[in-house]
Amino acid sequence: KSGSTTGEAELPAAANAPVNKIAGIAQQAIASGSYGWVLSSGDGQAMAGEAVTIDNLMSTSGAAGHVDDDATGATIEHACFGTFITGTSSPDALVHVRVSGLL
Image 1 (spheres, rainbow, N blue to C red):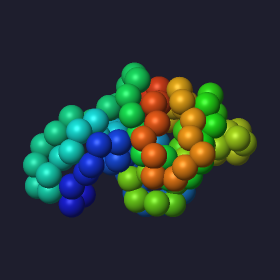
Image 2 (image 1 turned 90 degrees about the horizontal axis):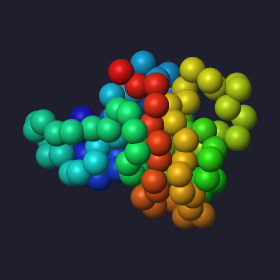
Image 3 (image 1 turned 120 degrees about the horizontal axis):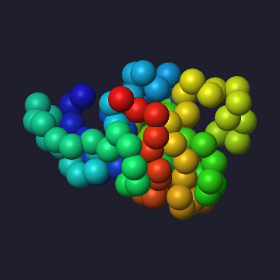
Image 4 (image 1 turned 45 degrees about the horizontal axis):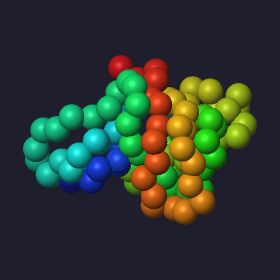
């Protein structure tokens, strides 16, 4: 990837991407061509692509590096990799998440 900002997921810009394509969520800015830490399990922050609701399942959104919630988790079970600890009504907002099922 050409670099990440805090809360951006290291994942494809596709809605409901399978979890085996997700490395984690950057918890600090990572410059292009550099190494950095990503959250692959536990609590941290993520950039919401849309409004999200607390306790809903988390999956990728159609916006590069963003996550979205899925109220119908059973239909995309292979793409869910955590839950939202906090929610937001605004797109492009940092939210607290609990990541599970990666790596």
